[in-house]
Amino acid sequence: MNYRAILIALLFAATAAFVVAMPWLPAVFQSRDFYGLSVDQDAYNFAIGDGQLADLQGRYVYLLFGFLRCNDVCHRQVANMLALNQQLQAIPTASADQVSFVFVSLDPERDAVDQLQAYFDQQGPDFHSVKPANSAAAHALASEYNEYFVKSGGGNDYQIDHSGFMYVIDPNGRLRLIYTSSHLNVVEMLSDLSKLSTS
Image 1 (cartoon, one colour):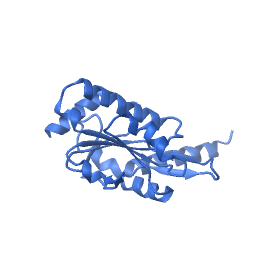
Image 2 (tube, rainbow, N blue to C red):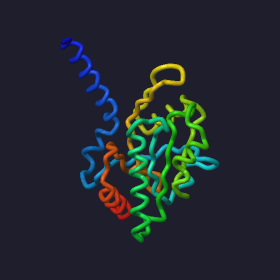
Image 3 (tube, one colour):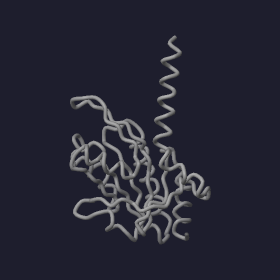
């Protein structure tokens, strides 16, 4: 067994994980009152259909970067969004009518608009998919949120690796929470939303 190769691989994986987490490390020490990672900074504005993210100010926005051929994390996060929306609709609160969900494609070359709409937008009037102009635009947008995103391989069978975080933007256009896991407790997410609405 080539222990040197294994050690190098482990060190590379640890370094990559640190690089992904590094932009958010200061936030870890800000607050442990939330289930998600607490941050507080301006959310980068971008186009959504004929409008833009800023048009959704006054609402909480749950933002996800993903792609249709994703094997795992994207679909779990969309399922988390659907479960959260279902709970919001079942519980008569003011927040239920103040939440939007946005899915940004990291694979605009292969994700067709009609496929994105069938996958995401048709879940409800508060679900909005975004298809950037090309991979470079998708990468640039993901970078604004420190979303880890690497495209590898050639032809039409390339692979995409990304962090799959879910970002929560408050009604003032501030990025407030990041869910770094795709295995989420919806009850805790509802609790976070309630805390944000009263903070």
